[in-house]
Image: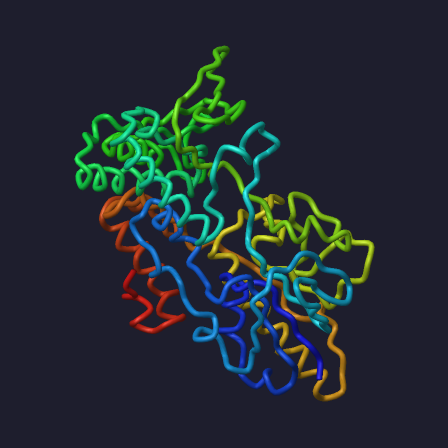
Length: 402
């Protein structure tokens, strides 16, 4: 039987396995490799990093996908035309790469050494533990830098995290007997405004909300260097230092390092450009049996010519689309034929909207062409996230305890 290998258990591959017709599991050997035994809701990791939530974002892979798919817990290091390699070697006839993202430091000095990034459940937990440790340390040292927190990046992840951070630090200060007015929380953004995906009206609402939470937003502030206990920024023609013992980097992401470490692929920023069938283009080797979805796929919007931003929304859609493609391939092969993927329907994507939470109970965003804000936006976001949780675990998945 043909071997179908899936790498990664994020939104893309889980979406594929939730969508595909069960008949395919009798027509090929399906195997999924992931570096943990669980799928985590990436869109909720900011709340794990702030300390608001914990294990409610985790879903057992075995309980979430069809029994016809075997699973290995392994960390893939590189891929070639025959196999993917980790502790074991995983050969394939068809390969689906659905590996997640990694942090991009853009070559800025000190980012790797002195900042932490929200790239996984484990990394988010480390940040939450560090925040609590800094607050507890302040009780002993009275070092004001222990009460200072810098979030580098005013995009979606940075704003969701800094909003949640402000609320959770406030709660912890009350528990520990620390005056929250002594806390300094900064969000540093190089561009003139935060949340560039939204219009000026929504952006201003976001700014007002952050200020109400006690966050100081520094726009038009280019980060020159991160070092121990400080971020060096350029504002106009002036260089300044923002002092803090906790620095979180949310200023950019790229694809998975596995892509960059695999000389088999021609890639940029650990991503591979793909065509309308989610297959690699511009490569030196034949990759007609390889599909790339999610954060490692660089796909252009045909209407704008720009690459789609990596989101859970497009990753799920790509996985669901690919389910149909693989069904067609296996059906054809079962009848002794070989299907030309180019003859199959192309992938198309229309964003359904985007909602950014800024602390509990408040969000801003767009659904279709309509702006939403406040409690209504927060409820809409909860419903969207809950729909995915329901697909994974039913009602118990929606109301999972921490």
